[in-house]
Structures are given as structure tokens and as C-alpha cells.
Length: 393
Image (cartoon, rainbow, N blue to C red):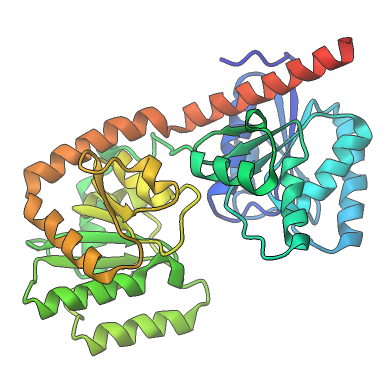
């Protein structure tokens, strides 16, 4: 338990509460603050997850926090100053760059402690972009969502290492709990996806939105290489929404048809029941072409007791232990992925199950929502203590 003051009020600022890891983390931390007797406010445009926030005892402060228009951002700063004073906010936590400007201005104006979370590795190809990204480092402390992200922040912005704390994103252990997923949920998905109940091939799941850097195209190439070798031991399931990227989806469909892989690769669309999807699979893969700042789809299946095969870069080097909880594969190399998939098939069910159990034990220990929230509340307490000492001096 963290030692936050009894009248602690947290204000988190995030663009929207639609969907995604940063949004889920916002709600998880709000819930943890309320559970400790504090108040939790979220300044945001709103979205489908807003009802979850209020159900947990958090409060919504609606404003156009998603806007990058400088005039709107100034207006947001004024709204936030008013909110901070009215609600006696103890600490401001920004979770995205555009609203971080408004939040930082408001925090400075009211002399309120300010922290920000780097939820991803932002690329800067110009000094202006680097300046824009650096707003996330202007507070009392910076939270990074992995050690990989932490090192990036230190190197990119030249800030002291002690100012950056790595807190990995947490997985909801009550939702991702194998014992809570009934057979009917798994069987229902198999039927919806056209997977036979007596399917003997290794069922490999790639979960992620359909976008080129997530590596679906690379895996279609790897499956074509396996077919050319006369190998038919793997069934690849691509689960994810195209989010309007119709062109890329069509490209994948064409590549699958051209290689004659219709019976080996299935585009199954968006999936609402990921715990059941991971139980349906024998192996989960995360072949991202670019490094992941955290990579939830490499961690969630491990919590469900499934081994993971991931690209050997970014934060997956922290979340996957080669030979123990899964495999790491050369990024972007279709030959390497074809060989790795074959290796996983040849490892046998007993070996994969043992790796899955090791993965589950480790992931539950390191990547729970409770561990993430406790570490975040400890950061808040640390910042408040440091500020207290400053005011006393």
C-alpha cells in the first residue's frame, strides 16, 4: 500500500476513453486511487470506456482534450486551472502529448506536481517534433511503460535516469484467467472462425490490428515458404480489425489466395473475447516489424498459459524469456519465422505446455494490474514527498 495523503485527489488528462492500453491504464489507476480512499478525476473528450470509469467511482471532466489546435489547448489549460483549484487536485498525470501541454501549463500556474507517462516510443525526425515530444519529460517524474521505453526517453531527451521510472503495463488477471473461460466460449470461437473441433495442426494466433508493421504480411510469406517445403503442420489465425485500412486487408487476402493458403491462413476479423482466443490457440505470436514499446499481445497470452513467439527487439525482449516462456525471432525475416514456427510445432505439446505454465507464473508476477497500480501510486507518493521537502526548505 502506498502512503498517499488521506485527501489525495488525482487528475489524469488523456485525449479520449475509446479503446486501447493507455486508456485502460487510466481507468485502472483511477480505480486504485478510489480504492485507497482518494478522488480520481479524468479530463478527456470522453468515449465508450467513460462509463467504466464512473462505475469504478472515478469522475469525468469532459473537454476537447484530444485537440491539437493551439487555441483549444489554451482553452483546455484554463479549464484545467479552474478544475485543479475547485477540486483541490494533489497531482496532475498526463498520458498523451497534446493534452500534456495544457496539463503542464495548468500545473505550473497552480504549482501542482506533474507527471507524464510515455506510453510509446515517439519518433522525432525534426527538432520541432523532438520539442513537441519533450513536453512529456517536463514534470517532476516521467513514467515509461517498459525498460525499453525508459532507455529511449533518457537517450532521446538527455534527462537524468533517476527522473524516469519504468512501470510495465498491467494485465487484468481476473479477466485473463483460464479457469474462468468456459468450453462454450472457446467452442463458439472455433465455430465462428471455421476451425474444426478435431484440428490437429498447431493453431497459431496473431492478434493485432491489421496494419503493416504488426507483421501479418510477413507471416503470410512465412506460411508460403512452409508450404513450398511441403510442411502442413500449422494453422495461422489472424485476429484484428482493419480500422478502415481496407487496402491492407485486401492485400493480405490477395497474398493468401495467390500462395494457395486459404486452408492454412484465416483472417478472422475483430475479436471481443481475447481470453477465449488465447485458449483456442496453441501458440501466440507477435511478429511486429518495428519495436514494441510494451506489446500487450505478447503478455496477455502468457497470462493465459500460452507460450509466445515474438520479434527479437523492443520490449518483447523483457516480456519473453527465450527457451523458457517462448521464442524470439529475427524481425522481418520470413525464413527465420518459417523455421521458428516449425521448431515450435516439433517441440511437442508437453514442451509447449511446460513453457506456457512458466510463462503464466512469470507474467502473473510481473504484469498484473495490481503491481502496475501500486508502482504508480508509489510514484505519486514519492513526488508529493519531494515537493513537501522543497516547500519546507
